[in-house]
Length: 451
Picture 1 (tube, rainbow, N blue to C red):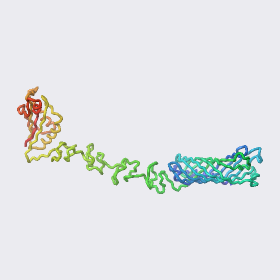
Picture 2: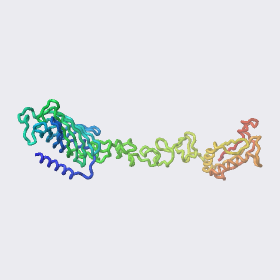
Picture 3: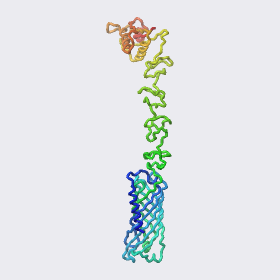
Picture 4: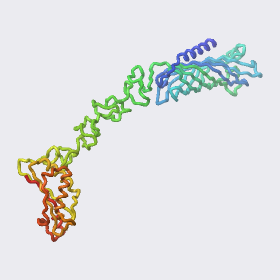
């Protein structure tokens, strides 16, 4: 009988190794293979009332079922059966050697830990029902056993721990040790009333995991209805095993840089809505999707228009026109050439100076536009000075100021043919030359256009 069981175990081991897959599929064994069958063989060791410890053999089979799983921890139950023998020797006793067959059925709670896809340590504890049959080395029943002086059935407890190594999809090698806490003192047919007999086993063998819910990507959705069986680990998935995609844009949340895109919006490979003009306003929310790159835009994606004249600032030659004013395509006031036209600009200077202050640049740029776009208008540039100013050269300072403005306008693109320069000197005062404030009003250049 023992030889038959040993041959059966060797056959299982050989068949398991022959079926081992070169590419082991990952996945949580404890979660996807809820039932595991084990067979093994190994030595038994006993401590009885005999003086010397003995070693024999033990053959074991087991069925495991994992019911609860949390993170990498699994809990369940294990039923196992043992067929083996224990032995011990003592020259002072007759017979001096006993060999006791032991058969046990074990029911225990099971805990297992997923250390990796390959290694699974486990532990079990529970109740064992044992039958023992003490005999001598000739297999003859011993005295107490022969006369049925004690019950050969015993209910005891056991503790065991082991390690499984997964070497293929369904097959594992394992090694475990079991200790039987026995309160019976007749395993050797001898009772000294001081110390109960006890024994333990070491088992090495093969386990086979029944695969009825294979989950290759370990996402909790069995392969047989997992539409995305190769999802990366630790990625949240839906009912059918595919990564969550809350905005339904085809890019799963775990690699979606814009996971809140409105449904139905076309997105790029990062899950973000297209933004053709690169202004940070996606096309679906951009009222001006063709804005040139680098132009500042508002919340609707349109170029800024500070004066509200519908001509964006980046092409508005007159960005500060009055609210409601009629302007042309360049953002400047639209003039009606059919009517009388008059436009004037006054530029003030420091005493004895002809340098144009930067505060007037914008007005002169706008004036350049008007000069070039209204052919019927002639522009007069008149220079003035106060009564005490003197010029360091032969020309008067008022003449120099008028020419400076003329030069500025021509450099800005104004047509010289539409400009007339004149020197008015100090004879046309608008302020009292006896005061500092009055003289500051007289140091000026007046530019005006007449149709």
